[in-house]
Image (cartoon, rainbow, N blue to C red; front, side, top):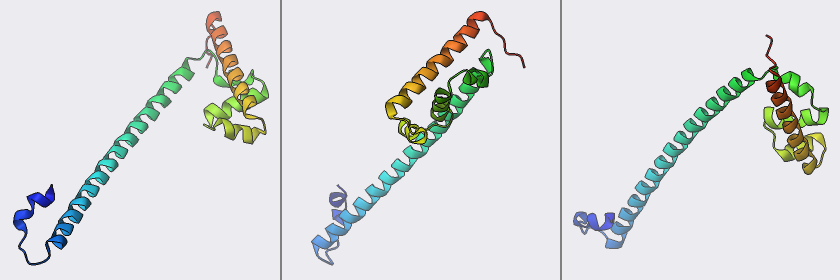
Length: 138
């Protein structure tokens, strides 16, 4: 489109083909620069949203931890050693299942099972304390 709109500027001092190539090249470079700016703007917006989401998640997690009937450490202490390690590596340290399998020298299905059972046990313990009306003493 730029080539047609620039046609009135062609002075005829050189080959038409070279002039058209310069117009096309400049037009392409402008388009690429615009796309780069759009991409950078989107990335900046995504990073800002990620930061806000992380902040909200952290606040929510803190509020939830404060609402537990007992300190989290007490609940974790009631898990088996292998479940506690798997749960902490996954949820507190953010490791992936394959990473945990490598760290603990356990097969991936075993790690998945330990995390699932540890999570279920933590939920059971918290529900039990909530039903009993246990209150945090700090």
